[in-house]
Length: 310
Image 1 (cartoon, rainbow, N blue to C red):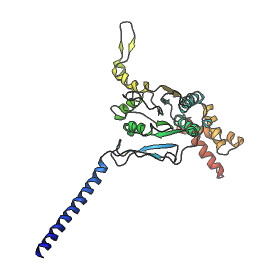
Image 2 (image 1 turned 45 degrees about the vertical axis):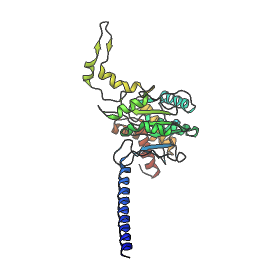
Image 3 (image 1 turned 60 degrees about the horizontal axis):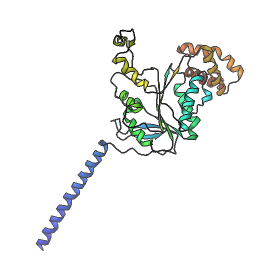
């Protein structure tokens, strides 16, 4: 009887030690799961036409990255964008080629702020979403995850525009080289169903300094050649197949955009004419006659009109 009790006691101790080991192992695995890169989860492709790249935790980069569906997107249409007809035609044509599975280029949209660069890309999404176009917005800090994003969507039947808004870099930022590789610097060919559309106030995406001029060299026949510093600064822009430039609006262009948005918000022709002076003062206060300023004025003015204000 004593032998039996001793055997049971030994078995009980062994079971307790095993339970403690399993608890510690589960805790260790839980900690490892937060450190190790996680498989990119498939989003619900039917939930939206636009997505944002997000990452779990505070580490950033690729670990735990996923696509988050955007529930509410801007309903802006191509017809809402005035006085950028040449730019609109170029972007629309390139996007149509892409959606129709014909050759198309990555696009860099540069120039004056508030002139419709980002709005034009959103309008193209609304124009071609029914034909399978999808938009993925990626922050500059997450550009290192571009290979993961491309892998995630490469087998999908939809056509994806990776959208980088208000893009600019400082010297030495890692995202700069990551974007260069994604555009035209990897041993792997760019996926057929992915293009990159980026907007920036800088055409060359890196700050340009007076000291850069010192790197230019003159050959014996008088030709001027940029040095390595300048070559590096323009190398990223050159990887975009299509450059589209935007310029500040003239006064009449600005007032035309104001009239369009006031009409959109329900103002009649007489009210639009009466708002002209206020629209000019609004632009003067902001030192800008951009499309964004025109839209902001129209929202403010139409809102006050509907409330009976002045």
